[in-house]
Length: 222
Image (cartoon, rainbow, N blue to C red; front, top):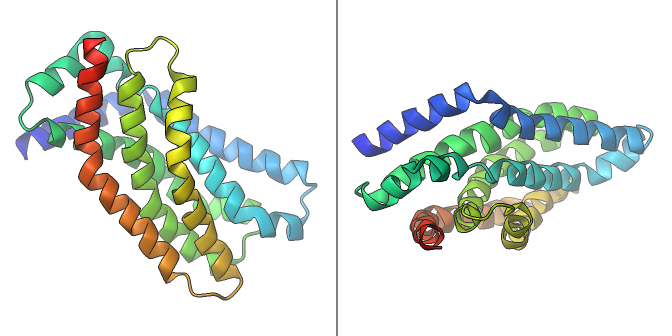
């Protein structure tokens, strides 16, 4: 656990020092939601019906925006090679790195959910469900995204490839996340959708750190 806590502190302070990396996805989310509201003329009925889908799609894109730099700095200064080859067990250091990424992206966007709900006229009764599915689903976004980021870290222009790798794997999270909020708005039981999100997140938590480690090794060998 010393390795985990040391890596966690390192990543935390690095993101604090480079605050623009953490703020850019949040600014993108806020501005994009505001633009949706302006583009529809502020029509409450239109925005309310599409609010869950809009929020989740923008959360996916904001998360994707933050992924390219996840391992980039460590790759350029050689820290990434030491992390994979020297750290024992390496998956703990990787998990700490992904956890900090989630706290500054997924968790931060979840905290912005009430503002997004207000702008998009999401019913107040649906807000707890929205917050819950974001809390359950966004860790999987960071974990799955980390695999794609590790595979493309050695490429000079890996952003497009990263999107092609990651976005298809985000689709089930989008379906269950937005679907749960829509079903709550229609008065339908949402537990099944939330359970499936939990299954995806737990599977990602179990497998992704090892997949990231393998992907980093592949990138370092290129």
